[in-house]
Image 1 (cartoon, rainbow, N blue to C red):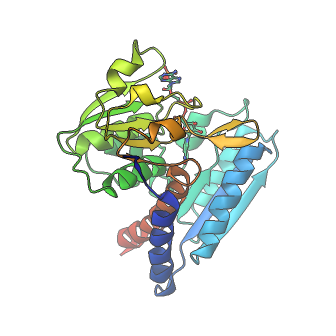
Image 2: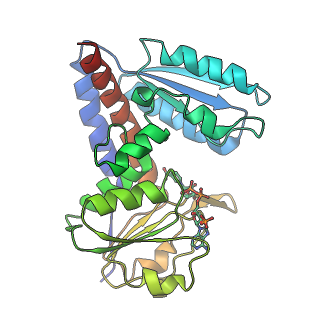
Length: 282
Ligand SMILES: NC(=O)c1ccc[n+]([C@@H]2O[C@H](COP(=O)([O-])OP(=O)(O)OC[C@H]3O[C@@H](n4cnc5c(N)ncnc54)[C@H](OP(=O)(O)O)[C@@H]3O)[C@@H](O)[C@H]2O)c1
């Protein structure tokens, strides 16, 4: 039987609808600042879509489009002013940044309470203490999509392909927290198929088009495709969707899976950041 398709767009729309109601009934508007450096076409598409979604739910969005050649100090000064701006509850700096700028330094210059991407070392560190404040949006999206299947995560073999700090590692930590037995694979993993074939839950976050083939997937597995790859003018995932859906139990499409859910999680994080700030002030 072919896999059930996990409709990330539908689930995200339902979350955004609830956020919209919550914001409508709130006396305060959440404020999001989006910082884009340079004119990378993919980054522009992501930023436009985040801006539109945030405005659609009724938030206040402030966009800072900066010149490719901006100095590190000027960018840090902007972040400092946004950290201190009471109208702004969440700050997003779209990655990647140009070579002259230290991405790690910039990311960690965002106040952890406004870090709605969840990329600062403080927020990533909280994942280890099971005391998350603002967790990485894509990882939250992945967990949400897995949970939408009603499959019990506890005790399952979960395999995450990819170990980046912003996707693979946080996803693995969150699955571990839910009591899955987690394996993390990467580019130096020998015999990838040996691992993926044992996965009840398989998360592909390698950035390699169609890396995960049908014969690498266990029958009935939940397959979550995080990959966004541009091939011949189309966007495709890390999973060979058409063939893998013949063996998987559940599968996310690309586009329409993790992407829209990540945006919904970002919006949710921004509202959470506003509520956190109010708690600190009171
Ligand atoms: N849908 C969304 O909202 C969303 C959000 C963020 C990212 N993404 C997409 O998700 C993908 C991953 O993003 P990222 O930022 O984590 O990428 P990344 O920083 O490039 O990390 C890729 C990871 O995949 C591993 N890898 C690469 N080739 C592999 C192979 N053949 N076999 C096994 N592992 C392999 C790498 O291993 P090494 O560590 O050994 O190099 C690395 O750990 C990209 O396509 C990105 O565009 C989507």
